Image 1 (tube, helix red, strand yellow):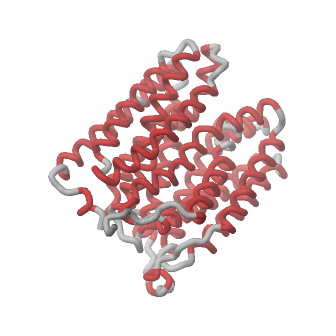
Image 2 (tube, rainbow, N blue to C red):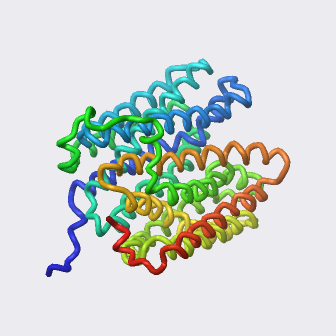
Length: 398
């Protein structure tokens, strides 16, 4: 009986997962739709690019500050503030047609997103038993992955078939559901954090942005999301070019495989560590990218969704659990912020660089180029595996 694993599932963990899923759905449905709306407002090509760039800058700048606050403050108060901030700024989009004000809102939205995503992830870490971090963060990460997979196509559908206002009000409705679920969640703030005040922790911007113990898996996570950035930005355009109307099947099978694989990959992480899991998944993601690039009918799209969902969908929570497992409880908020910043940076830079390259090559070639990022993931993970293969994984989880 002493070897029985600590309890993972309870009402608070379930509410938190659902709330985070609605938060990501509310946010992710805006990613592919705000740039074309900026173009409708009369924004230049440069200003359209700033829609993504300013958001990423805002998110990255806010995370050191929230990471510092998470070392001393109650989880619930920080989570609810982030949720309300996202609701307000999302609603404000529908009240302006001025390009510069819209861009200012986008920067503020980035600040709010950096706050919210970091606090939500840290709250999950506090609820998950340490020895089940891979499994627990795997299930929590499912809310992130499915949101990132489904929401962009939902946003595109609403934007193309209804109106920008319908898109915004749907996003706000999903965010409101998230706020209600967060309100119902019983958060757990560690005792060693409850007993501290902000005066006890010295703030430095870089010290609160980068967790030195966790920098290596966070760096690999950047390359992982760089590859995903090409999917978010170009798969709908690719489907239109190829005359494949069922592009939504990619998102459907992607989400299905990510869900099916989660219990398996989470337990694999806890027992064997991240290395072999991430190496295997990087191969699957690489294969998925090339399957998309070669697609000329919806059967290829289904196959690509299966491969990418099993690969990328499994790596996202594995990287988060790996980042968290290498730091202390007090610094988990900073480590979480660094992890989410790699996501924003990876997707943002991918869209920017591939957008420039897209002027010179076919869209299919962009997927082939970005597939190289998963080769880098494989190599960097293998190098770390060579250093740690003789070390028992449980000893890494201090």
